[in-house]
Length: 164
Image 1 (tube, rainbow, N blue to C red):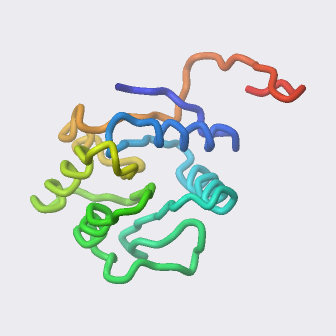
Image 2: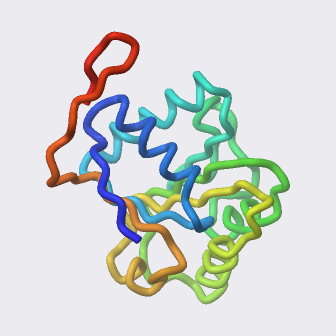
């Protein structure tokens, strides 16, 4: 399933986040032309709503997007971070940026298990700009979202204002 999205506007960041929460799989592959902008929008959503949103990067490990100074201990390596995500009993959106191939067999297995997690645990793992080979490898296990939208956006009226 491929859902086109426009991540250029701040409202689009909220729409992307809602699409992530509503995804049919625990694993979401998100392609974005403006990754830093989208991450900033997610950070803003986390701060304003109190949502548990985490960001993993190879150089910094796993940390909270709501509280920039809060880091999850022992989650610098991808495998440790994926195990933490799998074992967490709490709601969370985990955004992974900078994933590089090849993945170890254990990391691949953990990603596949996270994609198949029961619906009772609302947990989403979002791979931003994952390598195309990984997207092909995961296939239908993951929901694919794209930030480029070739279709024209329709205006709609909300609270007396016209919005895209």
